[in-house]
Image (cartoon, rainbow, N blue to C red; front, side, top):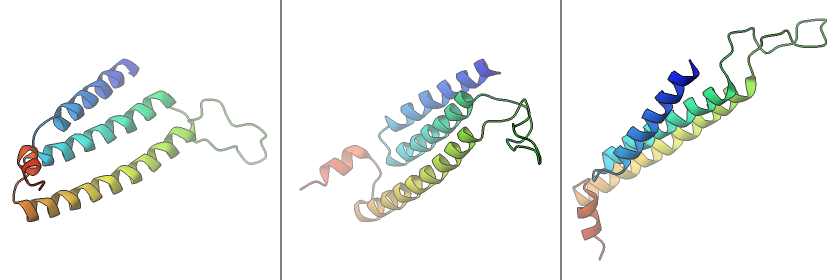
Length: 115
């Protein structure tokens, strides 16, 4: 299972970088989304996949039960999801406003408007 997730993370990173190297600004935004998904999956994989009980100490106990899931990667992924959503929303608004002003999403034509 870890090998499959590692291949998936590598594929997402490769697709994200490929999309970010394209000339269209919209494809850059799609690549940014793919990179954020790859980072989330990488954190999830690094935390280890455990089919276990919830990470809570039972009432009256002093130690958690065996086979619990680690809550730290889950918290990191939730934080990363919120941050990546904010970055993507900001980039989408920025790209939309640029397209309204310039009338194109080609990076080379955007460079020509610098005067």
